[in-house]
Amino acid sequence: MISTILSSIFFFIIAIGVLVTVHEFGHFWVARKLGVKVLRFSVGFGKPLWIWRCGPDNTEYVIAAVPLGGYVKMLDEREAPVDPHEAHRAFNRKPLASRFAIVFAGPLFNFLLAIIAYWAVFIIGVSGLKPIVGEVAPNSIAQRGGFQQGDVILSLNGKPTPTWETVIFSMLDKALDQQAVTVQVQDASRHPMTRTLGLSAVTGSDLDQGNLLDSLGMRPYRPAIPPIIGQLEAGGAAERAGIEAGDKIIAADGQAISDWEAWVEYVRPRAGRVIRVEVERQGARRTIELQPVAVATKEGTIGRIGAGVKIPGELPEELRAVMRYSPGEAVVQAVIKTWDMSALTLRMLFKMVTGVLSVDNLSGPISIAQYAGYSASVGVVSFLGFLAIVSISLGVLNLLPVPLLDGGHLMYYLIEWVKGSPVSDDAQMFGQRVGIALLGTLMIFAFYNDLARLFG
Image (tube, rainbow, N blue to C red; front, side):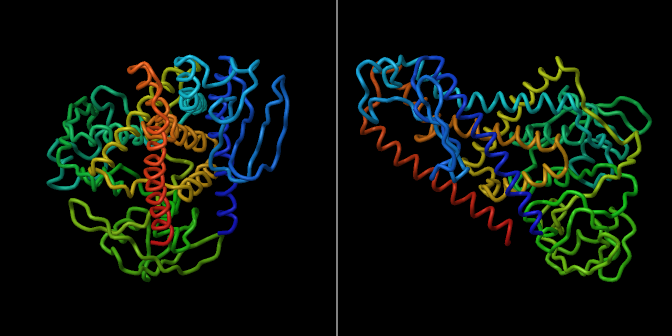
């Protein structure tokens, strides 16, 4: 447990350090290119741990104690007196277009980092489960749409879906607007067929709980897989109980568990009840008390422990899919992926603001640290994917028209462009107070969600 916590902290610092450095370097690089004098480039806030001065302007490069952000300090007459011979290099003296470009560069570099990360992921190759439909629940959305066990999902609305991950992402995008989706499949007899999923009945609570496939009444097909724990949900019931990745489920309440499907069927009807689970860990057996969390679905309340199965290394070839592209095609796919994820992030934020989705979906530094540690333990592809997603989130968040964020400054510049003069100091001060209140509220919700996942 201690090693897991230390690993999470370490990779969290690495991830945040990379993301902040890239973001602030965007501001720094464009400012220098446009002739603004940069006084300080800081990664982190608070007490400086390391300071290095170099360059013709003797710029300070700083690593500070609190690694939750950073800043670029530029020469500016609004902050301190400026020598007349350097006034032309002050940020506030630059044309509106230059100031806009300097501020916009931070989020832009976050999107560029995501593209680079996804490019590397697509070059290395992303492995996943081929989207073969398993059990279809009676009277479910999937059954009414004509889905049958053995269907291989080829595309959604014309977009190829080589893995279940791409299927769920495409469905989620349409489910946010409760739109119908056209699905091209190959049935069990290898005949091409067209199915239709009506997503109007999918609610915000279904999306909040992360059980989109359950709400559709569809499960991925899997052969008999040993009941070995793979991925653990950060703060989930399994992690809180002390179950670890690699644990093999031997028995539950004295009843032998033969495979993963048998384990899932045992857990689902026992929401809120304590299960005495016998697991095998590194050759030794131990008993753990586990209490599944109650989750509401279309079929009623089910138990959920927040753990996935460890996919055997020798998964049959017919069930495996790998997304891999040439370097040139990977660039195109990385740009598309970054755009899609940016749009989805923005839409989910809008749905939270309008109350369609719960703010329980927000994550703070604790959850991000847990995800960082887990993704790094899985492998470089997983960690790069994590970096890309968080970098996109940082870019989108910073472009929101909220004072204190880059988007707030860009909003002021747009107003200045329309009215022909800068926004007044009083208006900017009022905006800063509003921005502090909004960001403070956001952070409170995020920390609360983190603690609720950790201890709830």
